[in-house]
Image 1: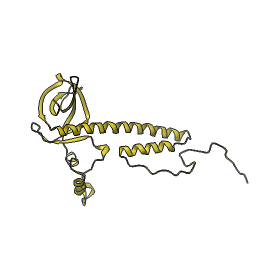
Image 2: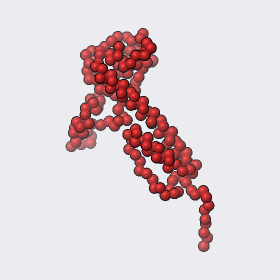
Image 3: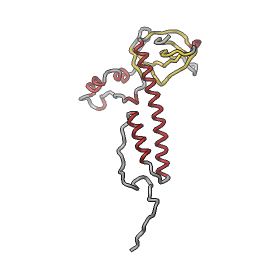
Length: 193
C-alpha cells in the first residue's frame, strides 16, 4: 500500500492521482500528484547545479530557485504507468478510506516516500511558525497604536523569521521614543521663553 500511486476520490468527489505515504486504522494518507513543470524539474537538482545554471544568464532567462519556505513539492520523475513526469504536492493531503480507491496506477521507491514525509513535517512546522509570526505582528501593530513599547516583540518576530528563512528587517534605533507613536509618559517639561 505505502509507496503506491492510486486513482482516488477526494472529499470533493473528484478523481485525482495520489501517492499513499501512510496507513493508520484502515485509513490512508494520500498526497495528490500533478504534472511537473520546468521549475519543478529544475528545483529537484542540487543547489550547486542551479546556481551554475543561472550564472551569466539574463534575469528573464534565469530559473527561480525556491527558498526553504517555498518548497512544497517532491519531484518523482516518470514512474511506469504515468504519462508525464510528475511531482507530489505535499500541501494537498487527503485522508481516505479503502473504498475510495479506484485503481492502482504505479509504484515509487521508498526513498521518495521518506522525502515526502520529511517535507510534510517541514511544511507543517513552517505553517505553525507563520501563524505565530502573524500573531506577533498583530501585537506589534496594536502596541504601536496604543503607545506601548514593542521592541521585545520585534526581537521575537526576528527570531521566528530566522527560523522560517525570511530575511530579517533592520533593527530600529535603541533610543527612546523613536517608535510609531510612542511618547514619554512620565513628565514633559515645557519651557517658555
